[in-house]
Length: 180
Image 1 (cartoon, rainbow, N blue to C red):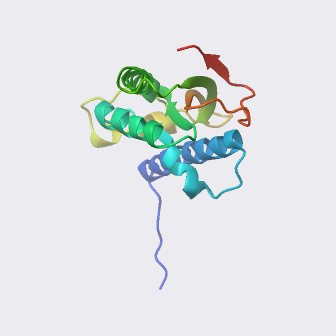
Image 2 (cartoon, rainbow, N blue to C red):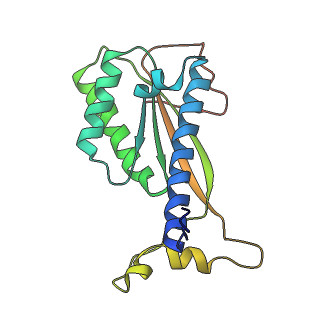
């Protein structure tokens, strides 16, 4: 018995959003692997990557990053996309400040990299108190389709790499060093 499943516009929009989120996470893991020059499986180093979302708790994320920096000699990568970048900057600055004040023996070097990701979802879409369908980005997404296809948004991605010791073996081409 076959079931005819018709995907709604809302389902398509959610699928695209999840696909873009997963792509961002995978790209962050691949970037980290490239930096440390590792051939290890991604699951081993995933603990050294903090992907900041706009709904994350700042206190929880700062604590997590401080614990990573205290317990390891491997670099820690912090990643944020679009609207989460401001929260990511807050988390990274608070982490640096706390490490500098509470753990003066840990010397950090900071490297930054700004890139972009193409997206079909409008990051600046404002929800309104209208119908359920209009509260989603679905109408906006479907109305953006033109003769040439959907509108593509370029979302900024910021990566911050904290290196707890001097390590010349890291692959940091395309990264900028930030003095602390």
